[in-house]
Length: 519
Image (cartoon, rainbow, N blue to C red; front, side, top):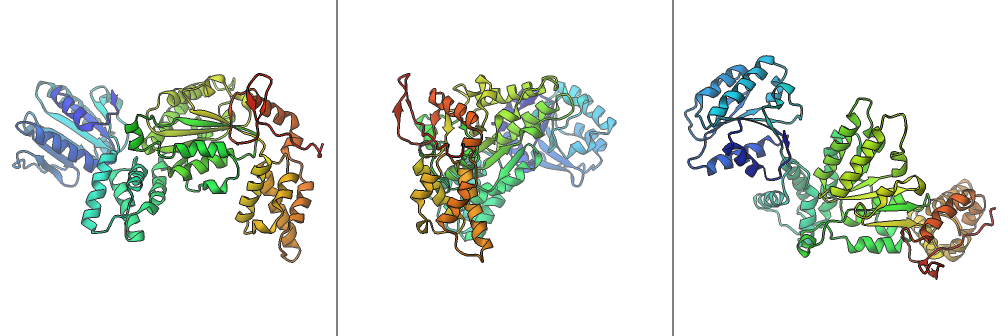
């Protein structure tokens, strides 16, 4: 059986009292495991003997009788020497997964696990690989050792600061975010990240939060389906979406202990529905920057494998890794395309989709899901019901004021001075344009100016390029109208703050007509 127990010491103590004879601990953190086993053995009255073995140093005594003299470095001989220990001894075998292919080793371990039931000896195999031979899986308790808790990381940070003699300039909120950023790392990884931050600035302060988040990228190398995004967008670089930004700002401290003490649950996520090019993907990057959390993009296409059960296992592994790294933002882009149900995959896509839905509903780890979608009709109703998302936002065609903001943002990004442009005219003339189209008109105008002896780009250049571009609101008029009708029916909350007009069903809707001059 497999156990994912956050309190390893308590689980180990229970297993020892129950005379479990074989425990396989899956973790790269060998040092932490040995330390916790040492503490458990010391607390017994009298303390239980604990010895460790590896193929280089042979046996070493962790707790108890120091007169254990065997130095066998051969795995079979070492297993034979275990009978020389006390009848209540705990024997830690390191790197023993290297000998899984030896049938004699596997047979000897099975013999011991059956014979030791009549005394109190326990073999603990510490291994970084989850592969356990089928021959001994039934005899073993398999424990997935959890990464260090926030309390462990905080204590280790205090030790590091005390030994380094470096002053700590972290604010209370900054310290909590530093610890949050390190959650999911091994203790050694966290120590390296803390040390690098201290060396970089000569102190530890709120500036180091993002650097520690970036160090989490290495953890994702074990999953092809998760991509770490180190590039994020500040809220001021995203034009419009005032309602969505306000909603996010209210939840900026949602993952702190203060929020837990107040009785608030961790937010589950949001669905961003709307017209292509309105900034749905950009919003996911903005949330990561606003909340100082790592952004993970789930590549659903990489979840599917050719072998039976492989897709489901990849899904479980990717979501488990996201939970390990949490708190984090898990971005599922164009979710309607990712889980398009096909008739030729023997139900694999449905099973993967069902697993994701169940995880979204039942997860307790602080993984904030940001799901984006363009085609509402392709979304199954069970995805959008309450309980899986905290809110569903619709990103509509930008209003006049939002278009003015978007022009300002992209002009600054292209090293132009917004005050030198007629922003009011640009905002009026770009009615029906989405943010991506506005950005492209500025880029086209800059190419025009660049080709003419690198002169300064002007409002006239942008207006000229705007006339040659057919916006999506015109080329895909029917699709856009259907999407906006979905908002008009009150099925989602508008991400923008715009003037409201009463609708026929008594609700308030906010829709701005767009210019059909290109029709």
